[in-house]
Amino acid sequence: MKNSAFKGFILSLDSLVAIGILLFLAAFVATIQITGTNPELAYERHYYVGKDILNIIKKTTVSDAQNLNSIRQHISQGLITQDDMDKSLLDIIGSFWAEGNISHATNITKEVADSLLNGTRYGYEILMDNDVLHNRSANSSYVSKINAIVSGVARGRPVSGYVARAFALNIRKNTTLIVMGDVVSSSVRKPSGGNNNNIVNITYYIDIPSDANITSASGFVQTSWTDNLFKVYINGKFYTAGTGNKRLDNITAQLRPGLNTIVLEGRFGSGGYEAGDDGSTHWIINYTTSDFQSRPHTEKFYFEGVRSNASILYKKPVFINGNISSLSVFMNLTKSTQVKNVTLKFGWKGSETQISRKIPSNGTVSWSDSEIRPIVETKTSYSQLNSRFFWFVAEVDPYSSLENLGYGRRILNSSYVEAKYTSSLPFSYIDVSSPVIVEASSDPDPGYSSFKRYVRWNVTFQGNATPLSAVWQLAWLFRTGTNPLQRAKANGIILYNHDPSNASSDPLVIEFARFGYSSNITQGVLNLGYNKFELNFTYGYGVDPGVSLGEKTAFLKSAVGYSSVFPNFTAAKDDAESRLKLELGPFATATNVKLENQSIEGIPTLWGPAKLEIRVFS
Image 1 (spheres, rainbow, N blue to C red):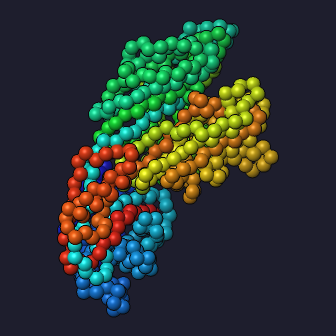
Image 2 (image 1 turned 60 degrees about the vertical axis):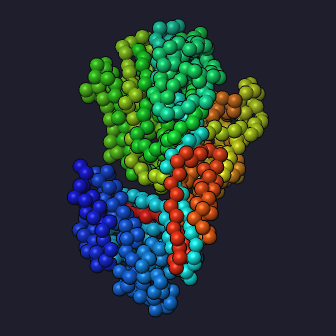
Image 3 (image 1 turned 90 degrees about the horizontal axis):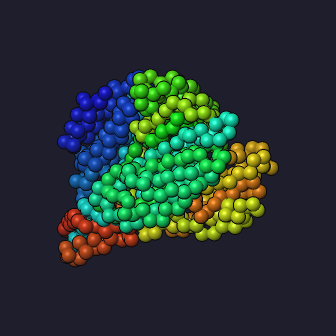
């Protein structure tokens, strides 16, 4: 249930300016307790506590805050003058920060936040462009983040002239939608040998923005066994057929803006046990759109639709760039299902651990965070899942790769993994994605020359883009019975290392089908400009770079703040538009720009823009 009374109180903060209100608000927040175990309610409360802090420092003037010890001290030292009295606390904090006087910024930040949160169980951390202004520690069962792009007037002598800032209200951007298939298999061979006449259908859902102009589209199909016969249907129409795998170099005409479906229909070939997707199938759509965010913050990661007349094995990879607070799984098998039970497992670093087996009720089955968390924590922690692939593995009926034809099983695309997590990305950013380029490969497997034991990718972020993530879908080869080296590096930093000579190294991953990371993992792995990602293996393992796929995602700023002072409005506006164009770089064009200009006669110089982040936890 939404806490509407609490939210209504927060909205009233916009009218508060007196420092006495801060003391009242502190007493109010102190009465708020985290009750129950509802993660959504806990997150909401933490979020609005962070919003309180943000509103206080934005709305309260220095004049109204003169009774704060830190303000009095800075006035007595001559660091805050009479010219600063009408500025906000944010102006003063940001000004000290911009000058490199972090201690002065910290003194004010600490007193304001502590006045608000003393007597509560909340901890907090306040950062400006990743510089910690102040923090107060507490347990971190719940965490929320508030982000804002801020700028303001600085301390110093008055100057005369004009400044301007620019906001992109509408854009047109070039981006790529990449849909990577999951690992899905089901039997097409009888235990006694030969065709069991099963047909395995996988439906991929390709959601393209309604205003998109599709410039090119392609795909690649790889079935569970190299001898599988398959057919591909796009938006209900037969497109192609083949055996094992096939490139689909141009499917542009078959796709349209909005929701598209691509069906992969797999059958028995000449002896392979299973049909389905080995995790290498993918679809690449290049298009232009006016959407700022093509991949907004989402908490539900949906299964593809699957239909089979045998048991189904579904391995769902999940990659989350954020701090996870809870995980749950829901599967819809249809109300008319004959499925006897579903087994769910958690996959991490090559091993799978069973969570539980459940009998469907009214055609559905689900697992809560309280059931999943204890299993995850036997292998790792939720914090370690940030920006790394982990898996949920579902067996729809006890799985066997050899079965006779049976009753129908279905997994509807309304099935999902749900992850509650916090993201540090401001709402005003623009996301852009594109494929990653293979730069070099060598050391082929002696029996399968297309599979290489060394592959290097060029991951370059241009312009002023902020790198977000890089993920790969890998076509892999493993020789049974071997124990090869498996090493992944980014800019020379080791991200994964299975070393047969070191028993304490990372485990062997037989299905090295996914890999991904972001700058959250460790500093230096994903930077603006050129980045080098490398995979190294020894005998027994390899990756086919020709059909493996990498994707990089970055964010762009959609606004620029006040900058230099100019002698006239025209020059200031031209400067703001030029800086906005530079921020958007080669990826996007602003089609509608809002310009704001100010005469700064008698007003101090400016600082920013900078990213202010407030984290609240308990």
